[in-house]
Length: 96
Image 1 (cartoon, rainbow, N blue to C red):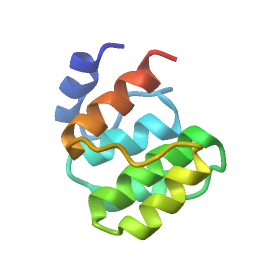
Image 2: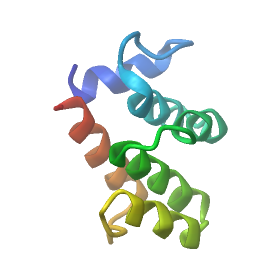
Image 3: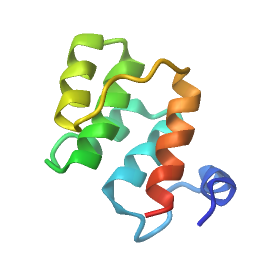
Image 4: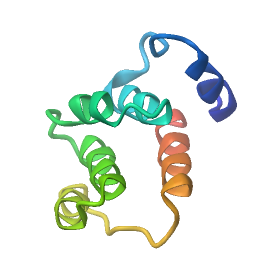
């Protein structure tokens, strides 16, 4: 699935099937539903899920908590817009 196809699925009520927890979280966030996005990101303990969780807390404005999750992911908070971070992170996961 491409980023364009992923974004076009925002018109649907539910995320595409079989995309995994991280992309589901980013899908809900892309539709403006931060709580549903966070609910999906809060649980899995792998580094990629921690990275999505970090982004969500950065978007929330909770930078201390975001930095904690960036560290859990083995990364640092990027110095880019939230929109760019969402796009880069989504592309990264789609390309796995």
